[in-house]
Image (cartoon, rainbow, N blue to C red; front, side, top):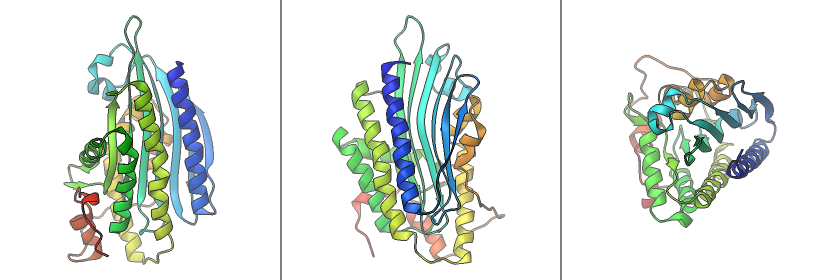
Length: 307
């Protein structure tokens, strides 16, 4: 393992610890359970899951470090120049599904990939980001989420946030539904346009910003009252989340095709979810407003709240 990989791994393990501690503190009752695992083909990780808490219905904060001599089809198709190279992939990936439908689901991921071949320069890049999936949208929360994202990107150039915000809007889009998965945030991949130290600093800025972006929203919404009907709506919308992860998500496909640990890969799926034939919220309802107003790839930092 190179010194670069060691530095990234140390940061990711610490990030996992800090995020878990912050989420446990916010929940107030549930604790993460750790499952350390070893991958037969090379590497391993530590899966941490939490559930049935006062706030968090199900969540996972996973660290993995896998390596091997052959890349899965999803990766080699994406980057054909990697054929014949050994690879290392490290990352922290998390998904939090709260009980309360007024508290959004959140997702974050930061990762590092390196592929080497004797006699050639290593190929490496970073990727990651974070995105928010509300069920009952609140402008204040959406603006806060994107403001933190913008501030994390600002030291690296004025163009970084708008580029990665737009990439997030494109990526987390359910093509078969014609709608975004949530209100976006940041997404980037194949990041090596700067030198390694700058790219690594950027990854740290994004990883560290997740708690600043998410916890204030949880604190504002976790005590809101909700009805059985609102809970049912949350479960229908969670169905959209499942559809995206199983059909489009690059990380899920890479993990499954590379022989990754299935339980860790699929921990992102919500515990209670439903589908209904030709299901739609009632026209003019608060539920309909989610897709009509909030899920529109909106420029949240270019508008004022409307109360």
